[in-house]
Image (cartoon, rainbow, N blue to C red; front, side, top):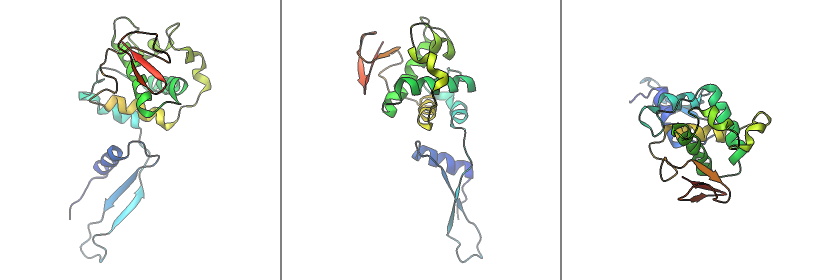
Length: 180
């Protein structure tokens, strides 16, 4: 009978159920004397810090050059909730991509906090300590850090608003218009 490591099973399940609230680990029994030899036991897996895992896996991803500290992750989640909690998951990922694209660009500050706090850019910055992000925001950040392809057509997109007045080459995702 094949044995599977708990880490491998959790990784497979995370891939299949990226947005699930709870992760289930399947542990295969390997006791030849047991009449229930092929039975499986289902147990709740321990909590997983998805953001840290995403950073560990980020070697060959689109945003592997972006460094996200724990504080940066909290700021991102708060601003994402404030800016886009009513948007689709893809729309929320696109907002994170815009932020990361700005960090990479010479035209913007080179840190996540610098981009988010830049005067006149994220009006929600002032409300960041009054919001409570959900698992969805942390999942969106984690997925963007793990992605090998972007939601937006390219990494040149550095704007988003509701009317498409910023930038050029606009693309609409839900209630936001993204531009470069």
